[in-house]
Length: 233
Image 1 (cartoon, rainbow, N blue to C red):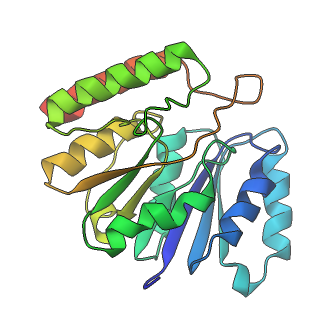
Image 2: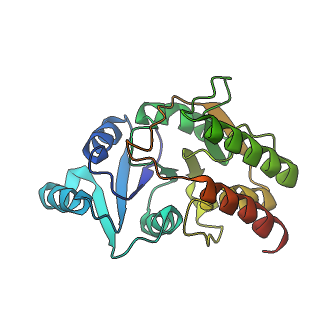
């Protein structure tokens, strides 16, 4: 693959899955740097990251940034973007819901010049891979509202798998601190005329007992973010 991939991994209390995710990312077959942003974890995640940082060699291309207090996924993503030096920037959650084996497929439309941004869709092939019905319905509703506002035809605006040409992502000013960063990104990409391409991805939804964090409150905030960044920003 021509160029380098920057993988941004926002982390908050993911000690059970973090090392497995990092191992899978490391095995993805392309040149890359990995930027982990710990967002004030208090479950032992920080100690794992400090050990990994101490043992990492130059060839690992692992960079770890610590937030002293929890600020939210959006804040961690923005910190990661500021650290990224790659030609392509990908956001990777620290749980095991999204599989780095999908990296080549996500990058293919960018490398072919068919897109500026690629979204990995959990619903494009009709599988609807979510554990909870309320999450499925909320995602479909938010995507529907987003499409109305942006005139896009997306199937999964809320996906956590997004990969960008570097100049696209650093060229938009992001403000959101929490999960509402997803609709903010979509609205601002659309307003600047960037081409968004979707591909189907594998997805292994986890339960709240396993550490899932998003709630109905985040859905309301995402809805407000769509209106805010479409009409008032």
